[in-house]
Image (cartoon, rainbow, N blue to C red):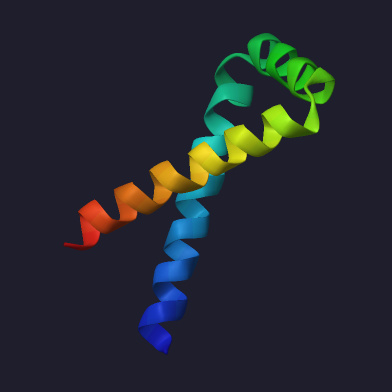
Length: 65
C-alpha cells in the first residue's frame, strides 16, 4: 500500500510540474488557450479529455511493461 501511495504522489507531482510549465514560461499563450477552452463546446472538451486519458493510459502501459 505504501508503494502505491508513493507512486500516486509521484504521478500527481509530475502532473503539477507539467501543468505549470506553460503558465510559467508563456502566460499570454496559456491565457489564450484557456479563453478558447472556455469558449469550446462540452462535446469538444469531452473529446479532448478522452484523448488525453487514452494517451495517458497508453504511456502508462508502455512504461510499466
